[in-house]
Image (cartoon, rainbow, N blue to C red):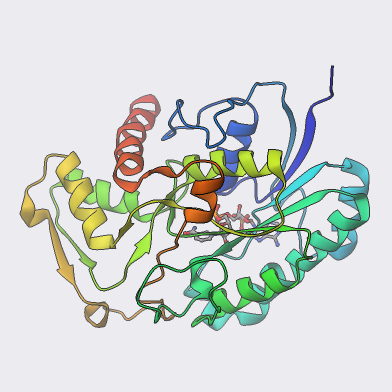
Length: 309
Ligand SMILES: NC(=O)c1ccc[n+]([C@@H]2O[C@H](COP(=O)([O-])OP(=O)(O)OC[C@H]3O[C@@H](n4cnc5c(N)ncnc54)[C@H](OP(=O)(O)O)[C@@H]3O)[C@@H](O)[C@H]2O)c1
């Protein structure tokens, strides 16, 4: 019998990390779809040996610690999720952001290569400037508008040609702070919301993304892959849909333009950065449509609250 594939996950305490560790252990995370696995092969609970590292376990900006940890753990595959993800705060903390997203990724990729592990790095739609006018494919030229986007692009460039780079976007999980919780809390409290309808993107449920990552852990392809739920949307459309799931009327969500946001966000976001996911979909399967993913999140976050009460 072959031994389990040993997978080391950085950023394991973040919203994608929590769901990925569950999926690799053969579990379905809250908000997940138990019937979905892109390559059609479900994960057995002994297929992977998972080492999930939080920032407390391994600070990826500490190059010596990175090398030591990987030499000790001897993983077959590394999924590098750890990142400086505060997009607006990054505008005033560029050095700290680049230290994690560029230098941290470079250290991880180099150490992965040294111990013979396949390296999977996660990047973002914010490497694009949003001016293309249609969905971005993997070979479109990046041109980031923000410090965060620029730091993630530099992280991509520090990876080796053998590595896998996964660009994803607008990540939402049951666990973790994200816009779905803000919208649902407002809907349940009887308040209304205003969301922008002039920024288009692709939503990614952390649980579905985690299933796609499990497929990539098995297949270990090199190069860049766009992974997100199917269908482009806007935050206004998402808010209106969450409102409808929670029995709120049309008055719940009002569309506004980015220029109406007050205070204005520090970081400039691309106006249209939806990811074309055809390369992943035609190799395995498309991720579920974003409305399915949001409906699962709304149902399962309520379950989580029931348990908490
Ligand atoms: N969230 C999105 O909308 C989105 C969109 C596109 C791409 N992505 C990418 O997807 C990946 C996962 O994102 P996520 O949503 O799961 O983010 P997240 O919830 O913010 O998780 C990121 C994790 O990285 C950890 N971290 C930060 N600095 C670190 C360091 N120096 N060493 C080790 N760990 C460190 C954080 O720990 P602390 O909590 O202790 O700081 C956090 O647990 C990231 O690479 C992100 O750039 C996210």
